[in-house]
Image 1 (cartoon, rainbow, N blue to C red):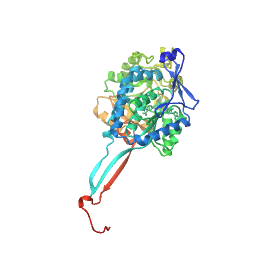
Image 2: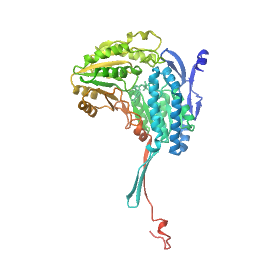
Image 3: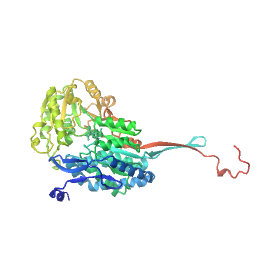
Image 4: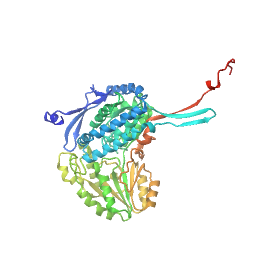
Length: 505
Ligand code: NAD
């Protein structure tokens, strides 16, 4: 079908999904979606206007009354079927991610797996949502609590994980009895439509999951509409702050996960082979377009030279090319603009005086038409440089040399972002001190990218998360429900027998 369309030079259209079907939009705004490995347009996405958002909210609102009262076991069974359907179709979904995002097929498949695990978690909703009961909390008084859904929830997602991040949100929200409107990134929106189709095939009633395509117009309508109860956002810090403030001002529950600049600290006793292997994947995997990518390696004491000795051959051996070739380690960046922005950071690092050890601008692959950059390494970076302070979100690793373990801790803690960090050492005492004292939400000990599994929760600190709750896991169940507590006492009932006297108080 795709080949036929290509032969006819027909561009694939990516519409909204509202009330269980593709939705004809009145909007005349469209966005281009590119195959980032070739630079050619591969699809066209409709950009919602306010009427589209209104239609989605209406549909979700109407679906809420019956979905929220659907027995929890039935909701869980939809999730079980959805999980099977993802497994059935994952190869095709990975190919779609590779085309629209650019990540290499094996990496695309890995991201589907991490999202699938949240669906598996959501299958356990009957147990997860159970309340508590206290018999005889007072004399003749029992107390019980329950978690009830919020209503219509919205999710706004970034370009870098078009399959996984939506799965961090809607499976738990929907399993909890909410209805949902997903607004995916306009840069790679195809997968969101696939999720909606598969949820419908899994037995989800129309209106429970809607997908609205578009940009800030759609987002701002969702943030300000009084019918939306809660908003989950994942994206850059600038937009996260706007989303958090606007949604909160409009009375919504909100969790807004923002950007990152993650450090990997290397102590001199670490196994440098292991560090180099871990670092090369964590810095350059998915072309550095991961919010948990390692962007700065902090070498303590005399660990810099032994690490460089192991790291440089590995960087040299990295295979950069189209994501369709599973032998490649790293694909292109998402758009030409983003590639140019990352490239401008390499220019900036040179101007700032960092030592450019590997220059991705010179990589052979940059001569192709795709949005490629080679892996880049700066040494002797200092904390005042913008290449260290800001999130570059590309295959650029900076190296900072510090004297002591305490200097490393201070460096990490002084950074405005606090998403993830890692330490590599053989010393349990240092690792324990690091985990306890560091001001970051997710810590890896000899683990470079410590993304928690689905039965834990994901979330950073400082300017990497706005709101009280992390995403997925039990935090997700709490976010998408509210607590109700019932205290009950029953007057003397029928078991006391009939009473023939005049009733008095
Ligand atoms: P982005 O902030 O540009 O876009 C995210 C979403 O917000 C998209 O759906 C987009 O359409 C929408 N949006 C963009 N500008 C907007 C505006 N002005 N008003 C309202 N909505 C707007 O982020 P991105 O470039 O798609 O994704 C990369 C960013 O996401 C990086 O900063 C990365 O660190 C971050 N990220 C964070 C996490 C996390 O868990 N903390 C996970 C993945 C990505």
